[in-house]
Image (cartoon, rainbow, N blue to C red):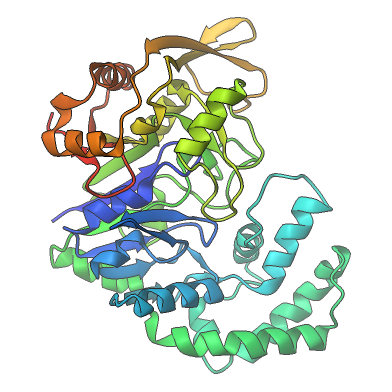
Length: 428
């Protein structure tokens, strides 16, 4: 049975949560392999919206849930998500990698301080993700889940705080060493005890499941264009977000990956700072898309910036991940717009290019325009979903075929609404 990786091909918020939720029904386990609580994956079931920040989106199916070593774990956020699922009668078969690192309060302090008072403002979620990864990479101040849930947690925490306190002082941290140590230990000891039963060697577990021919679904967080190495640096996240990270972030061989699915929206969005080449300057159109598409950050609540579909960026992201096929989401949101633009090339230094450059500040997008389609009711979209691809408005079919032709990849999943039922599966 296959190992399937689902990744975002834009700047996050592509609708991966919904796609993972649908595919999870036929999977045995769902794995998070990167990022932390900065992710916000939304699933809508029976008109109820669930937002997951750490728990894999397959949770609603009662599947085995795995948080891999590549994730940085906020114990408070994770505990709250577990309790929320339990209160809703959902079985939580959760396994947390003993090698995953822990987000501590000083990580959040540094994240906020660096993004407001010191250094380069990059639009972080202020969840402590970047500083937690920094400590992991420094090999001096990182705390792994195994050490966190064991009895010597206080001694390890004491060493970490002693090493970090002078750095924290530089950014305006006021608490004394003793007070901060006692506060963190007192609060975080509770969560350590509650989470201990979930901590295990998930690398062994995953490979055992693979050897047993189980179907494993790997759920990427954020999007390819936010990748620490391949994204629009420095306006990126702190982890690798591409398909290859499923291996390093969970402990499986690349040879075990059978299928890669790339998810993208019918337009583009971005939260916070950083380049967005196709950003829509017509506020009337941007506000319409933002309102209909509920384009506000699931983690921060911030309004997302809106842009036309960028096929230069999308083709770059697709090549990095080498997807087997694509899933397009929120195509219904564009209904009612007369003319819809698609960026097919950039102008850089006066010359046309279809290459996505490492610096985007000086590029100018070049568009083609397609005829839009009328705004449909939710009932009409559901009828189309039940009837199949051929019943889509012909303008949407042309839009999809245009994308496929340029990307040279098939679009096999078409999401036309927030619920599971509002999805078309296309055989090509």
